[in-house]
Length: 131
Image 1: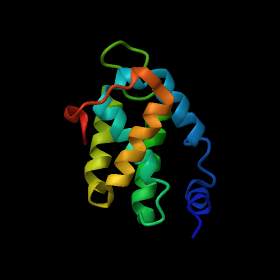
Image 2 (image 1 turned 90 degrees about the horizontal axis):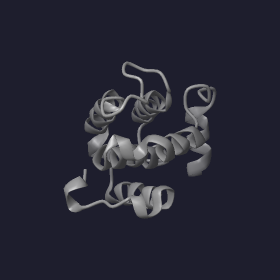
Image 3 (image 1 turned 180 degrees about the vertical axis):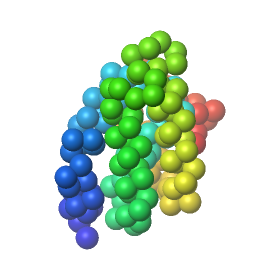
């Protein structure tokens, strides 16, 4: 099945909470405050969401997590220095641990490529940040 069509089917009706462009904007605005490891985990989940091989239950979990990341108001407001994105990072890592067995090296690399594209020279991963 077409990757884009399957993704559109999964996110249909959930645009209020999740949309790819909202994720991209959040990464551009707050991404570096999240930390490279959590940022790469979020980008990897974003990439995994497009995979036709990922089970629908895992896609729905990822949608919920990325939707939580996108929301401006959550347990700890994102604009607060240092601690604002801590709850987002915890939720992202928990979701990644649940779906990790389905994550491929290609998804991880696609996450890196997305962040390079969005953040340019500001994105400087090291082996230390690998998920």
